[in-house]
Length: 99
Image (cartoon, rainbow, N blue to C red; front, top):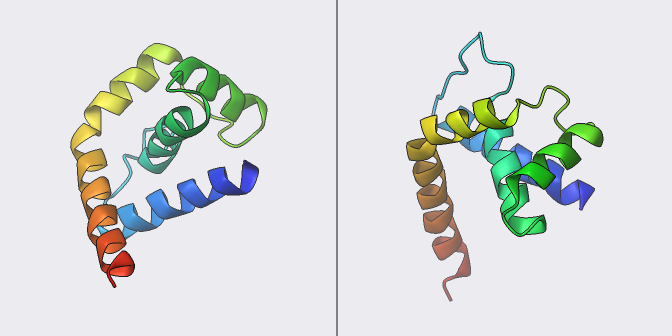
């Protein structure tokens, strides 16, 4: 699971860099980390955000994890960014998997 978490973060971070998305300098967590935590929750914890947040913080993947309320607000703030990233991944996946 560890290598998958790192891969998820790398993909999110690379896509955001490719989109020239800039991190707010005051944020403790990057948008790529917020996206990673959300995807990890969906993939490994049945959508349970609290378990994913706790796991990622305790295991040292995201040591600067936000509290539940602040994390939830950040998720909502980057909702459009999530859609953009998933659309880009869908287009790439379609191109790769076409026979």
